[in-house]
Length: 496
Image (cartoon, rainbow, N blue to C red; front, side):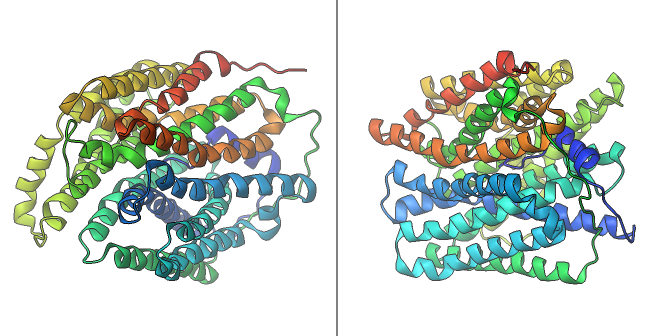
């Protein structure tokens, strides 16, 4: 999932106005970029595994839909609480990451996340779902610190003119993590003789990886920068109406993305929709998150102002096609080899790959539609935002009123149209903030707490009507507001 608060304008403004950095040992830049990009992948993976765990815990602990969503309250609540504390501390005593250095900030985030992951092993011995939540809250705090540290670091690792490439590539790897995380975690947990033991071992391994990365950074000399300037602000960041409306848009977007991803598996398992097993549903979950990767990498090419229209058409088409084929590859490995208990064999790959491609070919119609819309409206962030949110509204309504394959593919295609929402909302929200950009950005990060709160509402609706299908009406509220923001709320207007 994209809970990655990346905005090119934001971080370039930070680099220009707040950061005076000294780069040493230029050859280390490439290594630094690789390491930080791997971290984007790792926290994308650990975040999307929640979508598999929420259903497993619901079944194993006899939870209601509402109770199962408390996992997201803990995980994304840490984002909101951690970002809020960070914001107010920064206002009074200065930016703590800048004082520590971004390398130490990244290391601290890794250690906290690692402790959170590893703590799930002993906590699960209590056999109490509510005790487990402490581990997810701790993981969320660590990832919050990683978000605050890694995003600006990636942006300033090289020249300004290529910052867009670096940021989009890192986001792409984050989306790759959200795609394959639930695929392979689903296989490992659902096929293990004990799902509890599988979860314990999986998270212990993740904890070790996070901590090992932190130790690795001790021995890696990364480019260093620091802030030598103080920027005095006159007025209030809340004088900008587009920021205030944008804060709510981020709140609703993150909440919608999380709640839909969390309940796709049980939705696809409904007899009237797909009747899938948990294993098969976990495979299709990769299409939802893979759609986000397809859209993000595609728009990175199509919206590039340096490209002519022919380059956008060809480059965007090739990027989208290759990304889609990569998603199909991972689904093939999971569903045709791992789930089937067949050792990987190159001679079988072509036939298995073709089989999966034919099974999911319907999604290509939605991908082509997305591609055309991005070519037409790629230059206008608010228009593309409005159109994509309107399409999602239609998809949700179709998924409720219809059954079978129509509803099945409409729900899965939402990931495609979610892809550009975060970046467009973020960019439109900070447009025109100038020296207030840093403050405004931190406020937008706080609103990730929507991923903690709104899924509870979906759970309540599902419990009340006795079916998760009714719960998919709840995200309509989110996309109605996002549509409003795209049409009206995103207009820059400063209140003096």
